[in-house]
Image 1 (cartoon, rainbow, N blue to C red):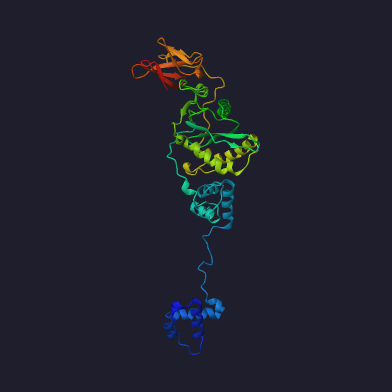
Image 2 (image 1 turned 30 degrees about the horizontal axis):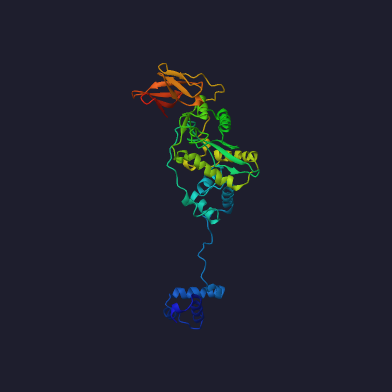
Length: 381
């Protein structure tokens, strides 16, 4: 009987039967079935020990798996994943930060998550890292924007205001707001300035309430004027380039994935009660990929620049030409009017000569807000 015309079990059974006969010639039997004499003796021995079940193929799995992750460790991994939604690298780092011994490598933890159905195989392909820049020190630059609003069970809507330190990724503020008005943002920022001090610069988007949704002739918004007067330089993201606020945008995605989409909030107070502990975890527990899996709190320190409850007097250089903004948002220079914005009404601004003849920079406090072109009798932002 050719070997390929029968199942392995039937051939082994026939070998064992014939090898068990009295005066069976094991060598001739091996040649007939085209196997080694060692194989004949192996099947005969296993048959005598276990009967016919002994002729089945044995499992290739080792009797012991010394490198297999212990069940208790897998439980810790899955618990962190279920609580925070983190991937293998963050879970591995967090376990080490907690003092857990013999933490598996991140790749092993990723396989544990995949084996237990915690990872979507198509999700990783969707994420691509931004081309990043980074401020040199904490409070050199903060990023601020609203996360897209979402409905509350009460019927109102929540507008999460987020403020992120560019250098450390530390979440300065996560506030559940009822709207996106200037007064609301100013109130929230005042509280953050009192708590953490002033940043050197604040990066915001274009459009309300940040300052570019007014008429083209208005160069400075009331919100910008308040920030500048407080000692903060305002920086706007490039038009049609939301990636300028990439760190804050990435923070919004994390906020949505780990918190907002996982529960229903009754009202603004309930939302803030959920935002606060999540922000604490984000700052002090959650490892951050772009920080080499360090936590944001390890790289952040409060600003030494305190918030001025009463702004100091506006001072300019001795060589500056000083003009006061009238109630129509204009300044007068060489018998002509130039508009700088109603938000600066009553404030003094400084005119400084540039390297180009006939052009003067217009400064409000420390920040240039416009440029006068004497030949065109106009302002350039």
